Length: 613
Image (cartoon, rainbow, N blue to C red; front, side, top):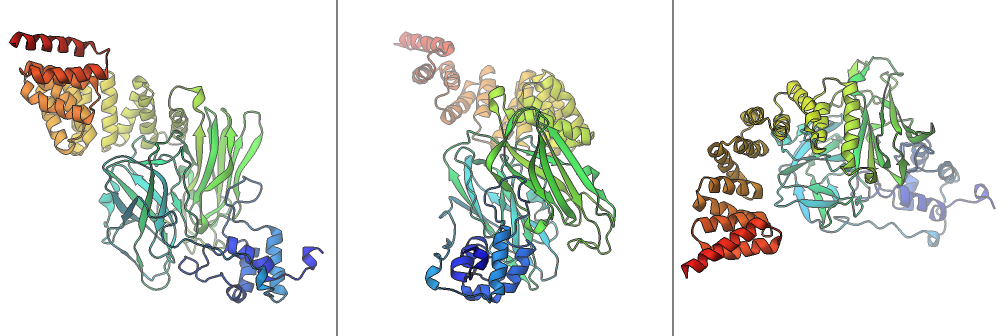
């Protein structure tokens, strides 16, 4: 008998749909405003369920079918929606309870067990009862003593009813903590957070996104993300007031793995925020962007982003053979349900492919999410009343065609495209210069880093990178000047302090170099390179008694480093401690039997000892 002619029941036909698609959020303690775990729960909301499923407002899933095959799709089929409507029209019969599938089981507490590290907000945030979405960022300090690799994270927002979704941002420079409490409340406002430009691929090019009811997303075993000492995590929360004062007290659980990543994805951003100038009353305004891929990649995931005026999102790839491949299509964008989408199978995009996007906007009174009534001109910005238009692509670049980090090849293409759009853009010039530096092309990097400093002379990181580039070109006087200017801007900037010491040493200004190293080591006592350099400079000045503690500490930090052991042994011998020098030099030679300096110093130390007998 066709299903349309059958009597539908909750137990046999409706419960499986509700358990799979609704219960993860619609259950006690979760974000949804009511539970849908039982027959009575569903009957109370039958007409409402029919309405929101027909409108495809629930379950929340924006991608259109046929434009990318995504894992974890929540989309109901037309037949499932029709079955729900017919069941309601038939009077919502319960059926035989024996036909019920097993009730869904959910983990109380942390989904993956006790995390390896839990970081929390330092103080609670009091969300006011006033209407209107709130976007708030909270700084969670991470006090690590060594680099960790994160295989998964889970956010526990404390009050799930007010936290709609969250993004996690890594702030390796810890500069954003300066904004914490700037308006007298914990955290700081803003829909989108920008960290200091460092040239790194943060957060190791992963989408650190969370929303209520979703299972914890574990990274592939070969693709964890890195968390270094001296970093902060910024939790960006989308908060929705309930009409009464609420408390927000979020905590983040981190799960570590001992395996460093062997595969390194990269995030490619398609955007043209500089073209965003949406007239009031317009529903046809759109922005586009494209990028030609210089190397082959595998497309792993996609993350579209716009604010309240966003309406349509299209992303596609134009292959070298002229074929057009749909990557994502959203006809009814709703910021409330934004998410990242992982492809069920990676999509191979060959070198020469052009990836592209188009985002359309509706700035009319008919847009129910328009924050302005009457509509007004809207431009790009980080506030909720501003707009954005981004499509992020997570790709795994093909490393077989280059000996260099393939991400640096992509970075060049990405930043050159950005300079086409924004010729005076600091980020593009800095990142392109940094990529060329890492590719050991300092001559090419110089003009971009020089331009970055000209555009943003207050950037300590840019000045440091420019100085490093000048150092690589043996332009020591110019490099020292830039390092001094960086330290004038931020005396605590560690890299500039150490690099200035190296530069002064290269100029033969050893006493000045030692002064900078002593300042540096006061706050960085575990730096092997700094101790090694200090030891060499002191030994060159004949101050062996002062050099020995630095060499000894360096040897403790890297006990198998043949060169530092050789330097320590030579310093001991020069200070007259031949008996102490011999075993150290023997260790140096054992660590590296080809170390001729260790062999010669050991022979002299042994002869010296024999002469004393």
